[in-house]
Image (cartoon, rainbow, N blue to C red; front, side, top):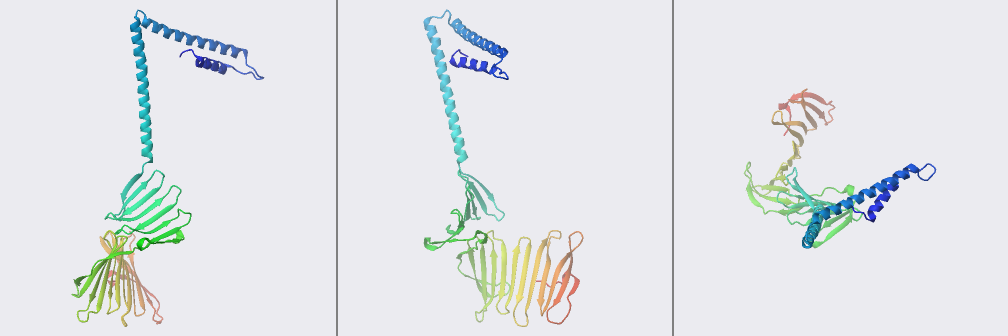
Amino acid sequence: MAINPESIKNITQEAYTALKGKALGGVSKESAQNAISEAVNKAVRLGEEAVGRVQQEMQALRGKTAQEIADITSQKDAFVFQARQDAAKQVEQAQQKAAEAVKQAKATKSAEKILPNGHKEVRSVNKNGAVMVKEYNEAGQLLRANVTTLDGTIRRTSYNPVTGEPLKTFTNTSGKDMLIEYKAYGQHKVSQVNNKKVKPQKPTLVSQTRPEYVKSQWSGENGQTFDRIYSDGSKETIKRFTSDSNRQPVRTELERFDANGNRVYDKIVWEDSKSLREHIYKENKIISKESCSAKGHEYTSYNETVYDPNTNSRVVVKSKYTRDGVTTTYKALKDEFGLYTGRYKAKTVYHDGSGKKPEIAEVANNQVRYI
């Protein structure tokens, strides 16, 4: 360390720190002596170090010519200059890396995943902390986009996957819950809504195929079939059969599929007998309903079927049949291991005013009246 005003200031500060105050003010004589002694010793050490460096440099220059001394001084100056240049370059590189890191931190980040229904979800976060979640169907068509800003406001928009045009947008960015409904020719309707009462949007019809002629595989009747495509990627296939003699409607069949092509519902309506049969498909469950309103043949039937992994087959777990004022319900029984036994608890209720009491019995599988 060279002896300069800063060095002297440091010595003084260290000496001041060594002073110990008395209880009634001032400093003790002993601490003052120690502080002075420490300051003197520190000054002596600095002086000796400075003299030593000068002696080393003089020893290195002893016997050198004026030109050699000039060359050594020039080399030393060049070394100092290069060291300073290298240090400046390192500082510049560090600043560039820091700037790049900040840029990367502020850049939009995104992640993708496949949803259970086969759709793709893309989640992005921009430099302002806003989160955007987009959902695409398997064909890559945009279905919906949700944006949540850092302050918690949201904007949810659903799209027509065929045209790519927005259908509806819910937002509360203005402080109020607003619903924007997009109409044709760039028109739109804005209304204030209660967010708690906003229901999931019902898919809208996007397109319909041209009718094609078809023949029933099991009755031989002639008919027409066409598909209806909806905004959520789902599809309905409708078949309408007519009588060969008078071309009057005989039967209408409808099948509904989700965006992944899985059948979720089907229905058959017979025009002549006024009867209806429908099935609702829910994951591991099938709900079957059948009814007839033709005079003298009125009845209703309900079945609930599930897949039993223990037997690798389907089991009717609930059934209900009503006809001629009598309703019978069946419930599948299980044993102590939770396995279906193939037997049912049956309960029969009479509605015809006969005065009969309900009947309860246990019956075998082949005695259950189901469709």
